[in-house]
Length: 276
Image 1 (spheres, rainbow, N blue to C red):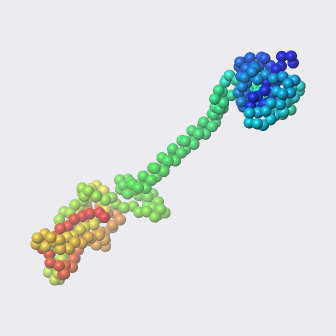
Image 2: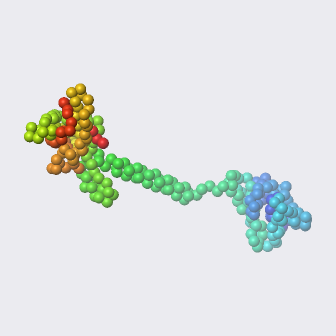
Image 3: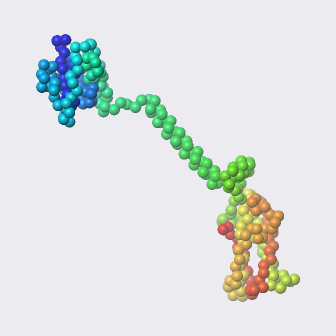
């Protein structure tokens, strides 16, 4: 065709067939379909009769692809791109074609499907993390949950059977609901050197509390420590007490234990509660 021209990519030396109308669409700016280089198609116009131009060497030192046939098949009209250049592509066996160029930054915009997939992934990840945090908190505060919502106890008991955990009564670390109402230490008149400790523990809370440890300290006449002993719940609560359920709400526990003090001489005592 008389108005056909030829332009050569300055990077890979590929020759493309163009027309003035095609170059006029974007002020001569085109993009190579081989190496994607954007160049001025007008400034790079060549003549097929110029052997030196067709044998040009690419900037990287490699000879560009051989000139493609321009006599076979029609050349389609250019489709204007959104970025200001026309894309040139060279099919393997037909004439050189023009296609619409991508956006200016040369990156195709993400598809709607890809965005939705990413959003779905983030939502799933967030939901999974929230579930894990909730599960961890539920496990950590299982004693409180069972105490204040007794209906959940069967489910937690089944879970702990398989997980190897236990459901324990709450502790009153501040001793704000648990107190020693009365205590007394007397010598056993029937057995020399044997002391009898009696006390009453009271739970004033409306929920069960764990049995505390007791600390008994024997002192001399100057209130100096003679001997100190810690008593676990199993040492003073008696065989009938259910240590796993704790001290019932608004309930009292009577304490009575025998202490061998034959090797010591004491004039007084102190009794405290604590949780180890």
